[in-house]
Image: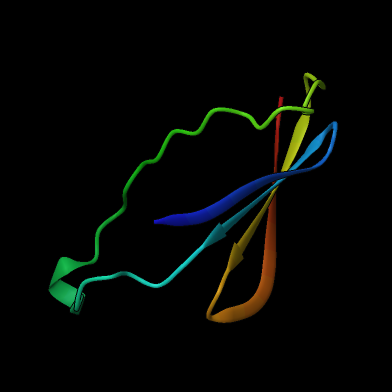
Length: 65
């Protein structure tokens, strides 16, 4: 579940995901979908989303048109 969503710039959003509050096992793992309202300040039609995880140092990016 997302722990924070922030506008980094007018065309960039940073979404950080935290660990599950449950005790998941591999049988519980499945793709999920989450919808978010864009934070105030995001005005561009083309948006880059930075995806971060609290437990991992990597940052993944996706560009949405």
